[in-house]
Image (cartoon, rainbow, N blue to C red):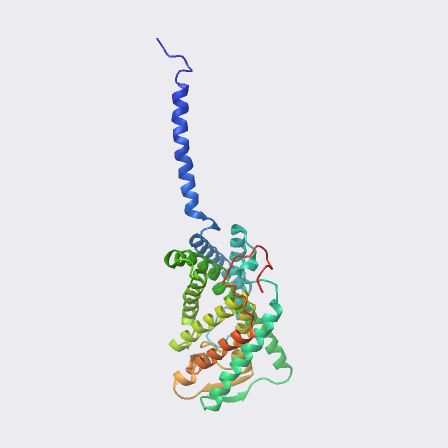
Length: 345
């Protein structure tokens, strides 16, 4: 006797109900692979950020050079327009990538070190500290006969014009490099490493260990990225890495990148324009003085500039002292903030 049409319905419903839990388990496992308690998992966030930046870089740089063909890098001194075009393009790429990740992760951009609270004060303090410490290093090199000022190159209105032009250019440099090296990547790598330390050692300051491990990795990468500069040296690469680690100390103290941006901009400005020395092996057009190094490169800095001198190390220690003595201790450590300006004081 043939079965009625409804006879197989319970069996079909049973088979369907047995497949539904499997599907839900699969989707739950897939979601847990990409998302955790804090949203998108840090590993995928880093990969996505790097990928977005690289895609933008391959689109923005050719367009910028097409619009300003005279800004293509040359073999001589660095021209202001080269810096504005290249660093402006770099800043645009990393800023867009950061904004995309902030939207995807539903966090304020301020969480990545850009709180508006005390930003002007920190920036001004960084500007003053960068010029002061670079002046100290140049003074030591000159007093010991390791640096010679040959001739003054600019006079009158040209001093103000080139001084302002280069200050703007190096502000772009500081903003782009700090946002890349100590912005989203520092935040997210710290977030990635903190649970690992918590699992390994329990509750004994895993946030601090995560932050400083990320700082060490990214500071090394920051220093290594200068290897393609003409005239760069191993000591210069080490100095760039130590400088990055110093900037991380200011970030740890304040939760803000603004001190580091100010210091980065004014340090490079004082090297390249004010004293006319090489900056990681690079010389700019429109500098105030022509100089040259004398003696062994590991002491004088040689073609690298003051950053290639062993005398950079005590100046870096002085920079750490300035941070510890003048910047308030907020013990931020890249804790997540609920709003753009809710950072502890």
